[in-house]
Length: 307
Picture: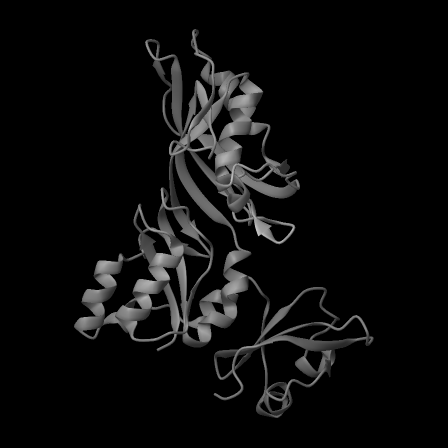
């Protein structure tokens, strides 16, 4: 079995839990996921099966869409509602929707984030969440993230009694974006401690909520022999690359991993990015410019050496 599975990860499970269960359901060990989701977050989790595990890195590099909720009034250790409260400041006056929209717009483009302590980022060989669980502090490296769209999608909900103000949002973002941190930083710009009070990933790696199926459905379709109908081909994982169809003669060279001149592929100019090579409508390899040889391309990932 091979292909890409748009899984709907339910809350209360880690991404690793899903992979572990799928290995049992699908009776195969070669399974991986393309982009971690926190246990408290549900949504689309791209799963790679068999040879499709070779395209995992391309899935994790792709854009994602989330729907969630930001709450002003207190912040937490984990930057979401599951953590311990670390700072409180009641929202005693209603903030205008216009001001909130302006602050959200200010995050569009490339931003700098400091990853939350409860995250999988490695510092000195240890993941940040390991330091956090041991009550250790460590300097966290800042990182760049891309925000393509960040919009409020509901009216404001102001709870005067509790001093909380919340609203729903939707965000399109690039790889490595911490939406929890985006919620916290939005609050900071508004002058209040904040946290992400809800989150769902509705799209990832070109897979969306409508396509996704649950673990229970995977088990059902596996049992009745229809699971293949829900798998996407490996080719769906390389759609971001320019496609180049090659001849049988070129295929004989490509399958052996040869470095080749760009004009061998019928390209008018030397490409400045990776390209996906297709033979008989199947993706067989990803080639990239070779910095050591002028006008030559080399394989960066061999996906199939037989068709």
